[in-house]
Length: 452
Image 1 (spheres, helix red, strand yellow):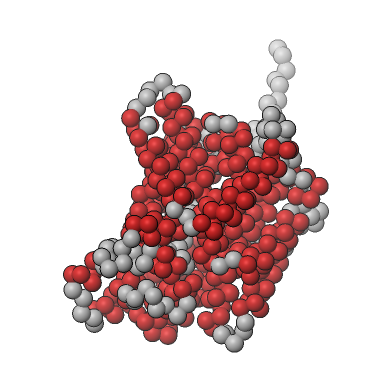
Image 2 (spheres, rainbow, N blue to C red; image 1 turned 90 degrees about the horizontal axis):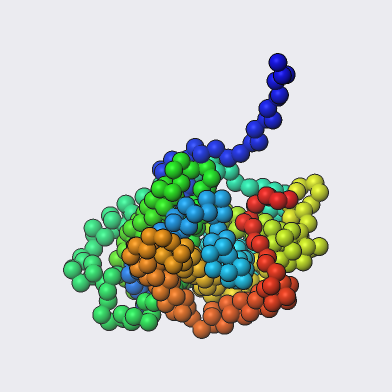
């Protein structure tokens, strides 16, 4: 009798334990229930008061893109990234451009969070200059990330729950305030359509910025390997999160516009929603909403800086950018310290060079490129190359691409100039690095340690 051969121990791997509603909650935590509050003022100014309309149009655009992410996550359950989808389905060079555009998002997020946090903190201590607050938040973000401080999923869920409670407080206060006002049918309809100020071009520009509210839903696809029935649940969760964000966000801004109908008179356009809350619920609600947005943007900015550092590390490790600087980690903290310091310096400089509006639009500039790429990847994989050429694999991705393209082109001229300069820089470097893209560069996701 032959002696038994010991079986090799199974390699540890990810376990499929997440159901549909766990994914939905995760997506809501990523986006945050208060997401429409931060860009409310600048969107209102751009769209001349039609914030509700911009959010609803943006929701339609994002629904097509959400479906695209869900469809592609079923094909590449371990990739979970726009640049991976585009690189596999279209061309490695286009995947590179998509990855470079995503890097723009990661870098812009800390900048706009430093700006908005500095403005919000100034509401508490107006005698402290903006410059001092900008330095404080940029240094704090950087210091926390150099120490490796990272909020857990449970902490994020608690924060999201707290923000949801604050949102309920605002809705109740706004409703009570409006019950004391005399509002006719025209006043109730004006947030959707005001004939005195409606302009389709202005609404389009506002929508191109309002899409910032939805940024983050694509993160659901990164959990594909831990989801029960990912082909069904990733798609459903992504769509449900977009629907929730659009409908709940539209309710927030609708009440805000009724409370403060004159979009030209905000004391500070960057923190307009806080002043709306003050009118609806007095100084206490002003302070609560201000604190809630400060917490939300602090967490978002710190997390985005960490994500940017990890994405730069992955690119440096793969040789997409200089490995000697970007591909290093600190031997003690295991943090890509060079990248964290660089992103912190960029965030600080950006807080003085950019407005919140321009920074948010630049973030969306990169996001729209990724969204367009995922829609095209859906079209190519399922319709062009697929055996079953259904209309549902032709019309939705085509509409999603065209809507995102239109909104991308609706961004203001300064945004497009800066964005194209960033793209040209990346394309030129990538072409030089790969000898005219003859040699592929593989981008990994932030935090992906596979292949180390």
